[in-house]
Image (cartoon, rainbow, N blue to C red; front, side):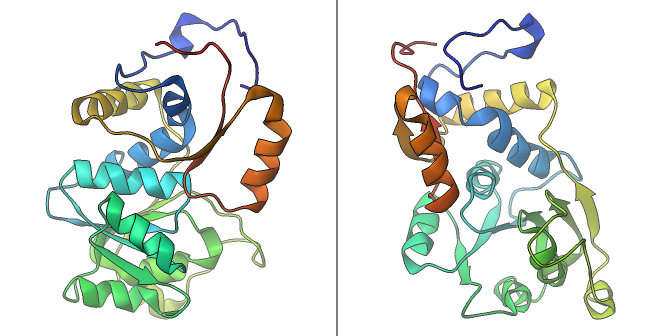
Length: 231
């Protein structure tokens, strides 16, 4: 909500983890909860299993942080060497350059000893879902966040990709209040800090939206409100 004041039903709000600033807390309701739901809404993930995240969008970065919190191995994709270094700094165990390796699904399988990823957090949509299926373990999971993408009207998966796995594809759209509170307990217990690319003052809201749309930030772009200095 881009507003200084709002009247909310008490059931619409949750407690902010004590160690977070308001700017950090502002990143949680959509991207954070979506990533948490992708990781925890299906078959339980076990420590040592492999999670694949795509790119460096906010949901992918939260998924990387939460997967490490859960004790998982994380493989991430990107097309930037600088961003690969930042992904590794966040905890990614392996990073695959999807431009240099168009068949990155096979690369993920090779990095996992031929087994594939136990869970793919699929943030790319129609343009990437076939490779995600190829990257997935035999009975793995794909948490599908979007079915829209440039150049394709919907999801298309070849017979060859289908034959490579018996993965379950599960649609994810944000999450419930209960999941939000579960996530916040984990964030508080492990002192997780969201990745923020930049914070703009309230009067620069238009600039913030423009930069978010054109600059491909690493992490969230936040619009701050003067005086919001407590929890």
